[in-house]
Amino acid sequence: MSLPVMALQLAQLCSLFLFAYSLPFSLRVLRFWNADLATERQLDLERQNSVVGAVLDLVLFFQFVILLLFLQTANMHLPSLIRGAMCATGTLQANGYGYPALYAKIGLSFLYATYLFLNRLENTSPSYSFTPNKYYWIFLIFSGLLIDFGLTYLYFTNIKPELISNCCSVSFLVETSTAEIFVALNQSVLVYVGLAFGSLFVGFWALFFSKNGFVLLFSSLIYAISGILSLKYFFVKYIYGLPSHQCLFDLFLPKYYFIGYPIIGFGFLAVLGVWFVFLYRNYRHFLTENAFILAKKAEKISFLFWFLSAFIPVLYWFFWEGNL
Image (cartoon, rainbow, N blue to C red):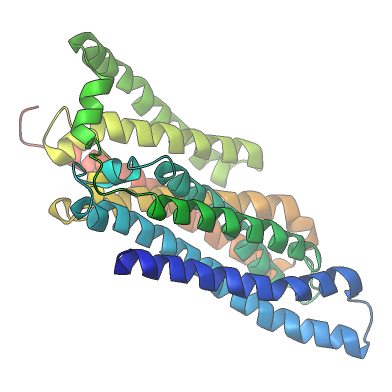
């Protein structure tokens, strides 16, 4: 097992250990917490709550770093060890655990972000609005960390370097084996682009002029899905300079100036920001004025990242000077 892989697994083990250490305290909070009392046990729980909350904040924030490290390892380190692989498309196909491990990390990051935001909202209020309810999330998050670690471990330990993996160009040729499919795909991509920018405008309206959080959340999900599809099937050909190359993982390589990190990263942060605003709008009756200020910041940040994630690919398209 190589050094980057070992470092990644060790980081996940440390996260599991810290969360396992917090489980007994979580049970105590769920059993004995009563903010209306001023007993010695309650004061002790409140002091430990601050320490445990700070530690878990760091652990969960580091999960986003682990996601980036996993992508970097699969995209730039493992291709040199797996024959036929040129980027993460080939390395993640080395066995049946690669893509599930990646999708688990992406999906669970929203769970981690939910706890982080709820904890941040609670810190704006002296009344412990989300305690002890937020400690139910600890057990769910610990289960998610176990699943994440298990999938990652199975992926790395089941990689067989002697097997030849398909690179992205081979996968593309297999998927689009006829000229008719390729032409039809490029015609339908206008639907993806239209959905992406349509949901973008609806999302901006729901963010600033509507109180309907479900419209805001739904439009952000539509934007995320249609934005990825339009990036994959339309905008990347202006970044790569090739009409047939549709691999999103190459966007994270140095030869394309790591442009995938701002494009997809900004979109990811925009959806997170929208999710934060949605949570605030559903819990605002529990919160103080300080939480309102935090929610306003989340609105502005999500708008900024939402705009940038759409604006950067358009710049490539607008200033393209070649022929495709």
